[in-house]
Image: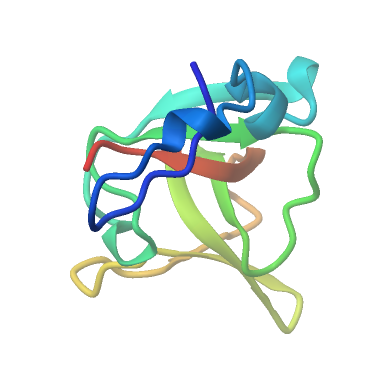
Length: 123
């Protein structure tokens, strides 16, 4: 693979600007031993540009702070949502108005699996 600039208008002799081989791992994965991939099922995060069938790159080494999109396990079920902390409480916020936020209750089994760092989807 090569990194070249590609104009969206008229063709260009861009082959003159080849940089070399492109290693996506070097550009997309910062903590290899803490990184995993998941495939999206469902449409609760379409407002964040996360669509059914997309591939997510998830980093377990990053801190799951308020506002970040995370992969979480709730009572053994995985979900992708935006983490929100408010007045000491945790919420998982969907980015689709057809879904309701999930308030994390101490009685729930809840674990953050990682922070979503990249979304890969076809155009």
